[in-house]
Length: 149
Ligand SMILES: [Zn+2]
Image 1 (cartoon, helix red, strand yellow):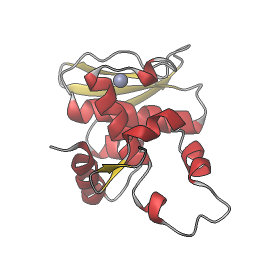
Image 2: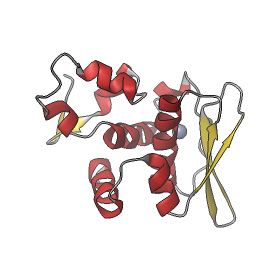
Image 3: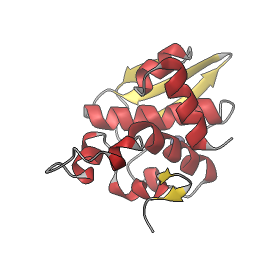
């Protein structure tokens, strides 16, 4: 299934786009711990899915990391995924791109790009507030079209 559809169904079913609330509702354990230079990672032990988040990150980076790792938990539950770090955020691995696409669709809903109320408040401000690096904007699509050429 299309990643955008997966996200839309989750948001509709659980009535939230908060990655930590969604994780909780999906029975995924979220652990906040000191992880040094690592943003976070996803692991599975026995039947328990666990999202690890670096507790020392600013809130918006925790949200981005949570959304990315939730993408793994939903799309790649069995996979051993790489540690998410600043530089691996731009990994070209298929599953990393899928996790990033999930995160972008979850954190940057279509309305954000259509809403005319953002006068004086640019899309870039909005993206910054959500912790999404500008480089990941290329993964966002609306009505089947990428928003960036
Ligand atoms: Zn990842």
